[in-house]
Length: 289
Image 1: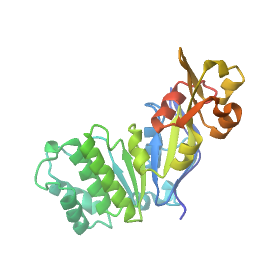
Image 2: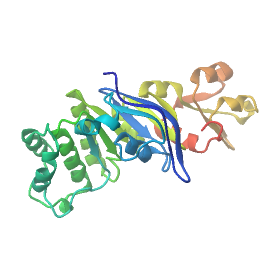
Image 3: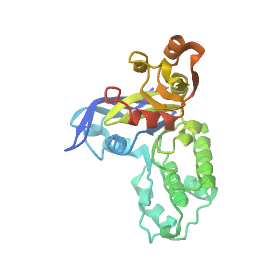
Image 4: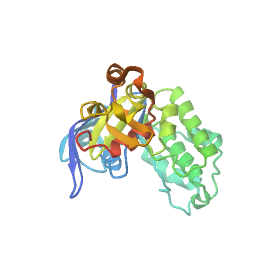
């Protein structure tokens, strides 16, 4: 199987917001970073993937299957790690396992024991005593223990201290090295994605702006700096957004080769981070978005 998830012409409309004609493919055994500003459509897209929402138009397939005829089979193979505690706060992890395990055909007590030991999770302490990082690890342990093939994570590193964030990213990287899993990772902390992602999906105002390999994004986008004397109505069209100051201009481009041909060595270019791209695109002219 080449794609774990396929959206074909998917539309979902609300009163004041809509996803319009979304086409998206998530490759098997990849880490896909999902970025976009608040209200851009990330949560809606993920809920559609999990069949918590149904599209108004278009087709969604997960593992090559549709939810209309294969919902239970699909959900057996999914895992979801939330950005907040979704457990009964007064229960401990041993009790939660007793509730969750019977829901899955492929549940493994041995794997659960191995992961709780590896993640240093106490089995007999109430979940309400867990830190946010420990709650994330608990969600991940549960997902991995029923052999989830496609794991979705919603802001898993938000609110974690730097040491815990690094530890969680190391866990995810080790998990992917074991093979057989696909990770879809929504986050505002884009530097995390620059460490672990294979592909980046950028959604803005209900539209997918791009879905490309991280390598391609890093090669295509750049911050350009130069004298404002170089700008005119035609050259400005080469940029997504331009910012002027007394010392010159700084702009974002998604066509490095074009800028090199147009300006040569009269400008300086540096690699744009994912955060740079999000910042400039958010303030760009609507025609780009």
